[in-house]
Image (cartoon, rainbow, N blue to C red; front, side, top):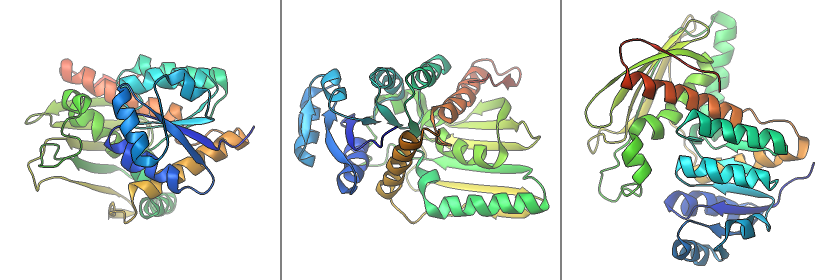
Length: 309
C-alpha cells in the first residue's frame, strides 16, 4: 500500500473551489493536480483561480493522480466514482453518496473489487467540537445505559439572497431530505446505530419530518428542509436517555479544516489498507435510510423497512 499525494478534483462549483481546492492547496503533504468538470469552461476558470490545470478529459486526469475528491451532484458522483475506482484511484466523496441504493451499491462494489480507500466527507464528523461531544455521549451511554431518543433539526435557506447553492439543480429537485438529511443522519447513526424502519410526512415546500426506529430500540426524529424562511435556518439536535439530556454543540472550525482531516484519513486508509469508519459502506447505509424515507413518502400507509446496503 502507498500513501496518495497527487489529488484531482472532480467538480468545479462553489464547494469544489472554496472547500476542496482550498484545503488541498493548503495541505503540506499533497499536490492539487487539477480540476475536471462537465463544463470545460468552468474547469478552466476553477483551475485559473487556484493556479492549477484544467482537464477536458476525465481519463486524462485519472491518469495523473493517486486520488480524487468529488464535488458533483450525487448521481453524477456515483458514476464518476466507479470510473475512478476502476482506475485504482482512492476516493474522497461528498454526501450523499448517491440518491438511489443501486447507485450507492455500485460504488461500494467498485471500491471492493479494486481495493481502493474511500472516505465520505460529512462536515460535522470532522470537527473536533463535535467528535469530542460524541465521545462524551458514548462514555455516558456506557456508564448509564444507551440513549433512548433524539431530535435532529437541519434547516437550510437556499432562497436567501446570495446563497451559493441557489442555482443547484439537484438540491432544488431533491430538497432537504437528501441535502440536509445526511448531516442529521450522520449524528443519529453515530449515537443510535443502524436504522430498521422509517416513516415520514411532508411539510411546506420541501420540508420532511422523519421518524427512525433504530435496531437497538431507540427512536429518533429528523426535521429537514432546504427552504426555511430567511432567519429560520440552522442545525440543532438533542439526545436523551439515562445519561440525561444533551444538546449538540456548534462547531468552531471551518469546512476547509475538516476537509483537510478527511484527506489525512483517506491517506491513512490507503497506506494501511484498513477501511475508514466513514467509508463508502457507511455512506451507502445512509443512502439506504434516505431512499426508504422517499419510498415511504410515496406510500405513507405503513412504516418502511430499511434494506441492507
